[in-house]
Image 1 (cartoon, rainbow, N blue to C red):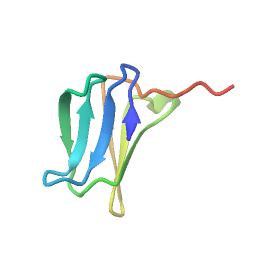
Image 2: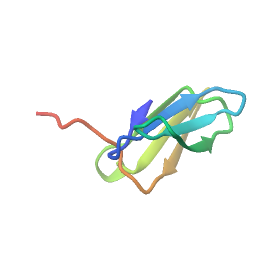
Image 3: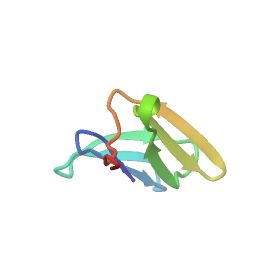
Image 4: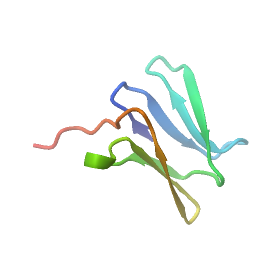
Length: 76
């Protein structure tokens, strides 16, 4: 799972309709990003790719460009 800067949660769900399910901080389902295979993990890139969502599914890697950035805890 991954979180964006607005606090939305991105979950890789190998459900009946596999994809990345997006939920608001209040738990409301906002969107589903369908994937060709059941997703196993999801993460945002860093730096110039902070608006890129990376998804693994089986032996494949997908990327989706979003309008929002992923949240990353600042390293000290």
